[in-house]
Image 1 (cartoon, rainbow, N blue to C red):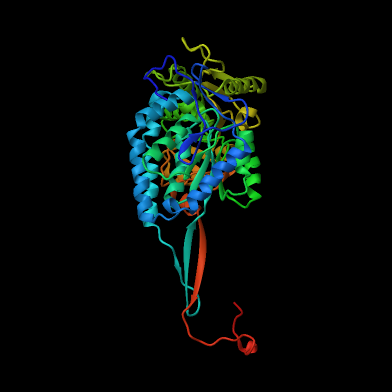
Image 2: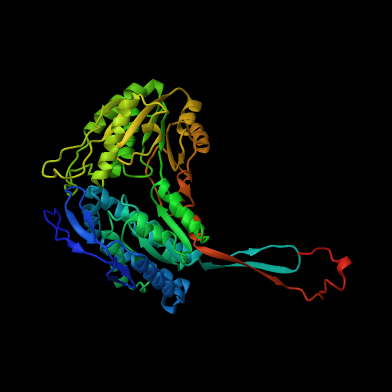
Amino acid sequence: MNVPSKPASIDVEIHGNFIDGREVEAGGGAMLDVRNPATGDVIARIPNSTAEDIDRAMRSARAAFEGKAWGGMDTRARARLVNKLADAFEANLDSLYRLETLNNGRPINETRAQLSRLPDFFRYFAGVALSRRDSVIPVEGPYLNYTLRTPIGIVANCTPFNHPLMILCKSLAVVLATGCVTVVKPSEYTPLTTLKLAQIFTEAGLPPGVFNIVLGLGQSAGKMLAEHGDINKLVLTGGTEAGRIAGSAAARVFAHQTMELGGKTPVMVFDDFDVDRAVNYAAFGAFIGAGQTCVCASRHIVQASIYDEFVEKLQAKTRSIRIGDPFDANTQLGPVISARQRDRVLAYSGYGHQDGARLVTGGVAAKVPGHDAGYFVEPTVFADVTSDMRIFQEEVFGPFTSVTPFKDEADALRLANDSPFGLAAAIRTRDVARAHRVAAAVKAGIVWVNDHHRLDPASPWGGVDDSGIGRECGTESFDDHFNTKSVMVATHEQPFDWYRDTANQKRLN
C-alpha cells in the first residue's frame, strides 16, 4: 500500500495470507474490513482464515524448519542474515511508520519514534546467537557432562492491535536468531504492517516458510492456531481471558508459552519528587498510544501532602494535549482503535461517576474537525478514586487514568498490590533506599524508577499473576526458544556389572 504523507483517500486493497514467501488466497467466507480509526474508512479487506489455511501455514513452517535452506543454516550465516533483515527494515522505515499510523491511528511522531528502534531488536539477538555457549557441567566421578541446545521449532504468535510491529518484532527477532520458524496471527484490526514486513524480509533473503502469516478473527483463526497440534511454543499478547483460553489450548500439546496479558500499572508518587516532573511522566505514561498499552500508567497513587497539587497540575497538563489527525505533526493524541473500544472507554467513565469518583477532565468522545467518524476520546482523569472502584481494579485500555491518595510507604504498597495484575509498576522518589525497597516489594515483572514505558531488547519483559507468564527480550527469551539436551559421557575404563557385584556398588545412578 502506497501511503501519502497526509492521506485523503486510500484505495481499498485485498490481502490474503502470507505463506511460503508470498500472499495466497485464504478463507471461505466474507472478507473482514480493516479501517482507519481516525476516519472510520475501510482501507483494506482480509480473509478470516479457516482450519485448512492454518494447516497450510503450519506445513510450510515445518518444512522450512526441517529444510536445508533454513534448518541447515549455521549460526554465523543466520546471524548475518538477521543483521541483513535489520538493515532492510531500516531502509523501509518511512513506508512502515506511515502505514502503521494509517492502520492503528497513533500520531506520526509516536509511530516514527517507536518503529525506528525495532531494527536493534534483530541486531541484539543476532549478537546473542553469536555469543551463546552451551554448558559443561561439573559432576561427580569420571564423567564429562555437557548440554546441547536445539531450536524448539514452530512458534505460534498472536499479536495485538496496539503496537503491531513492536510487539511482533520482540518475538520475531528471537525466533529468527535461534533458528525457529513462526506462524503469526496479527490482530484483525492492524494486519497491514505485518504483511508488509514479511514482504520486505522475503525480498531481503529470508527463506520461504520461515515467517508465515494467517489473517482473521482471534476467536476463530487465533484459536485454531493456538490449539494446533504442531506448535512448539505459543506467544500471545492480549487480554487475560484470551490468554487463559489460548494457554489452555496450547497446554494440551505441551507447547512452551510466553504470554503478556492485562495490566493495571500503579504509579507511586512520593512527596520528595518534583510534582511538575511527576505530572509530565503521568501524562506520558497514561496517554501515549491513546492509553492502549498493557503498561499504561492507569493508577496514580499519590502521597497526601502533594495530592491536591498533583491533581490540579495533571488536569492542566491533560487539557493541553492536542487531539487530532494522526498524520499532522502537531497532533499529540490520536484515536482509539475502534468504535467498540471508544464505547468501552466511555463506559468506564460512567462507572467512575456511578462509584463516586471525581471527574477531573475528559470522560467524553472528542470532536476532531474533518474526522467526524473517527474514534477519538478526550484524555480522562478521575480523582478521589478508592481501591474498591471498577476504574481502580479493571483495565480500561484507553486514554484514562485515576488518582488515589496514600499516607505512607506501607499504604502506597498496599494500594499498588491491590490488583489481580502484575505487569508493570512505577515509582517516583528521590530517596534511593526507598526506591529499592518499594521496587522489591511491589507485585510486578517490570518496575520503572523515575521513568515510564522504557524497554530494551536486552531487558526481560513480562508479568506475574493475571498479567501472564514467561518473558520476552533478553537472554531469558532467547533460552526459551531451545530444547536442552544433557549429554553424560563416561571417561573411565572401569569394568561394570551391576548384577555380578550388586552388594558392593556405591550408587545406583
